Structure formats: C-alpha cells, structure tokens
Image (cartoon, rainbow, N blue to C red):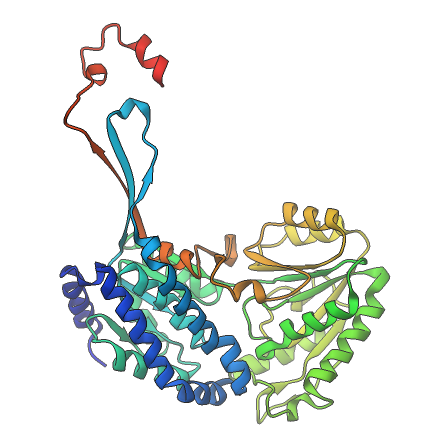
Length: 455
C-alpha cells in the first residue's frame, strides 16, 4: 500500500488543477464507475456470498442494484443540481444579484462498514464524485472479499490521484484519522462515530456520521396484522438482522399480541424454512465475536420461536423473545442480529414516552390504519426516518435524504442529499457599479429614520 500521506499529496495536487470541478468530467467519472461495476458484477456477488453468505438475489437487491439506481439518478439530475441558484436580495442591497454556488470540499475520506460492504462504500462515493471531490475509501476489514473487489474496481476505473482504496483494520483506521481530510463520511457504530468525530475536531474537519441505534417497530391494534407480520419479518431478518435500520424491537398493543406473533412465526417458517441454519440462502453472522455476543442476548426473555444456532457456519435462527422488560440487557444496545425482543403496551402514549426516554433512533416503523395515531407518532418521536406500514424501504430511494439524528447520526445522503453533503454552499452577492446608494456610509446623522423604513 502506498503511503497515505503521498496519496493525499497526489490528490490535493490533482484537485488543485480544477479538473474535478468540471461538470463533464464528473459525469464521465460516474459513467466510468457504472461500467466498471458492471464488468465486476459477478465478482461482487461472489464476494458478498463469501463474506456474509448473501444469495445473489439479496446481494443484488440490497447492494449492487441500489448502487446502479443511485448512479442513474445522480447522472440524470446532476446538471440541474450544479447550476448556481438565484436567490432574493434584500432591498437594502439594491442594486445587486445574489446566487448560491456549490463547490467541492477537496480530498474526502469515506469509511464504510461490513454489513452492506459494497453499497455503503459506493453510494457515498457517488456523492463525492458528483460534487467534484477526490476520495480515499476505507472498506471494512470484516468483509475482506468484498473489500478486495472494491479496491479492484477503483483501481480499474480511476488513478490514485483521484480515488484510492486503503485496506486494513483498526491500525489503518487510526492512521487515516490522523491525516487532515477536507471532509469525512463515516458509516458504523455510535462508539466508533465518537472516535471519528474527535479525530476530525483536531482539524475542524466537517463530518457526516451515519450511525445506528435501537429502531422501534410499533404495531397498533388497527393494523393489518397479517401484512404487518410479513413486512416486519422481511425487514428484521434481512441480512440476518445485520442492518442498521432493521426493526430492533417490537412494541405491540396488548390486545393483538398473540395474533401478531402467530403471523410472525408463520412467516419466519415460510421465508426461511423449519431449519433456517441449514438454509443455503440464509446469511451468516459476520464473525465469531458478534456470533457469541448475540447468543448471550438470548437469555434476556422467553424464546417463543427460533433460538437455535450453528457455530461452524456462524448462523443464528430468527429468534423471537417475549417476557422482555425495558431494563433487559437486550434492550441496552443495538442488537444487530436476528433476535427480536417483544414488549407489549396498552396505550400508544405509554409506548411513545418509553421511546423518548432513550436516544433518538435511526429509524421508526409504525403499523396502523388510524391516521390520528400516525400523526401523533410522527409529531412526538424524533427519528432519522422510517415507514408507515412497512420496514426498511424508506432508504431504498434516491428521492429522499437518509440519515440519523442525535446519537443515531448527523447529516444525510442519497440522491440530491449526497450531492449537498459532499458540497460546500457559498453565497455570492454581485453589486452593480452603476449606482451606489449613500445610505450605508457615515456620517449617519438623520439616516436612521429612513433605514427603519426599509429594514
């Protein structure tokens, strides 16, 4: 691996040429990335299978296909986003014109996680290209096969002076964070996010932190329980629960608990079979450390479905826990695995009060056919984003920003939000030389009364 200081020096020199600011250049790089990914598509899906046992279908649906969609969307709209925006000018500045320009930060660092290792490295990179930056990408060491394919894609498509991949574990992360980047985009846990933010503060480097947390899933008694169960099971156990916006725990109204849980168990069997650990398409836990952490959380309640595991393949069955309290260890941290604790509530206000006692979640899911209850939850619970009557799919669009709030993150991306995140907005006022109104100049004397009439 080349010395990171040398790479950064090359990238700063290339950025200084102004080439990355050219709109046609940016569009060409997006095209080049798209074509290079297409050439490596088979290797990407094979790597995802090796790292997380993702089927080709799940790998394409949740990773490769989403990257293609983002590329198409950004290429379609970039010219419009990049135009200077004419804004109103206060009357006191007459005669003048005000515009907002976007400009790239420079050399940016993108740090990606292991759970969706391809998508969460490439989607931010698309935003970086669109805005006109150079980039260093740091994929996760926990998904080594996918990281190698990402490195090959970037090498095939771009010179190191424009985009470069750094491999390695914790030491590589620490070395990168000692360097001065112009912007840092990080996806991962809140704990590591604090480390990134602390390192960035040494240089006053702006950051976007895409973190996580305990995302609640509320099912209210007016919901379509069969359909709710189907969508909850899909969202919770996708990628074996290793999804930052997966429903972390279930809050179900006490009058419908038994019926809903019956449907949930039915759909787990329908989707994954009687023995999920033997299902060749059921993803595995990323490593032994996380496997053992998840097993320890199964003692926090009564297992009403699942509970089995297979150490050799690092698989844990979709597991549903009841008799769980708010103070239980399984409720103390983001689960990030196929364990689903269930807590009942009697009144929706009671459930909202408990959610609001805790850090703001990255996602919130509400299943209801009561519009008043829907509006109450949306108004009263701060969260990064979410769905009404579905799970997860709110992030699978380039038309809406995606990001957290509070401990679940800061900043957002996807589509236009990605372009904005990797850009600095600068306001420029252009004053006419044809007229120079003397009101602002001293001596002020009796000008105050006139000033008050226009301000």
